[in-house]
Image (tube, rainbow, N blue to C red; front, side):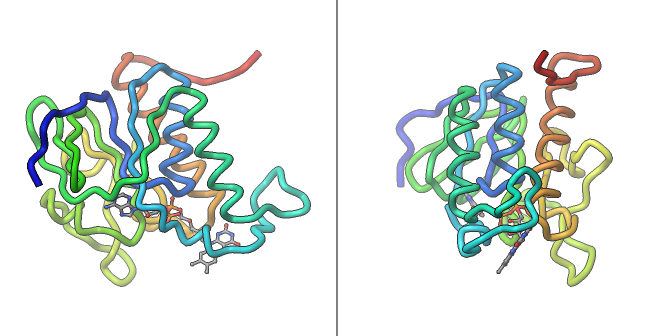
Length: 189
Ligand SMILES: Cc1cc2nc3c(=O)[nH]c(=O)nc-3n(C[C@H](O)[C@H](O)[C@H](O)COP(=O)(O)OP(=O)(O)OC[C@H]3O[C@@H](n4cnc5c(N)ncnc54)[C@H](O)[C@@H]3O)c2cc1C
């Protein structure tokens, strides 16, 4: 399908599970112009009660946790859209991310798409780890393609929602530090 125009963002996040949404909250709060595109197929949506996510002593519905996190990201200015990404192509100085109907230009892209690794391999990244289905990242969450980060289960971290959320925050902070240059924390006082 022909794309009529391209919107520009600092960061496009592919995937709206806990990793992508948490990254979105931190990027949004830092004033980084961010778009999150989500196929709404997080495995958490099928979990009736998540009992090990810190802060919810009585548990929380998986869908409720995702929806509340979406609301939080949107509150801080992240554009959250239910769209499946079909391709990511490097285009200096960053990337062009395409869905069926739209295109988004960005300086940084974050892969938070869990089992969907085709976008990573499309960028030339090889898969490894247990079962050969994970993307390798450095300490900041950056892949072998500069400007392309990955977070959450796609990187092979343990399959726990709270770990995915923490990892998303870590990767967002690394990107914020690259943009601003220097140490960054997001502390309310
Ligand atoms: C049955 C089951 C029960 C579980 N129960 C628990 C539990 O009780 N507690 C717990 O801590 N963990 C649980 N988990 C694990 C937990 O769901 C995962 O560890 C966690 O969801 C990983 O988060 P993520 O953000 O990396 O990926 P996901 O939550 O899987 O999110 C990935 C998102 O990326 C989107 N996506 C993929 N490709 C594209 C694309 N091309 N374009 C746009 N979007 C895309 C998907 O639609 C999805 O929304 C369970 C998992 C399963 C399968």
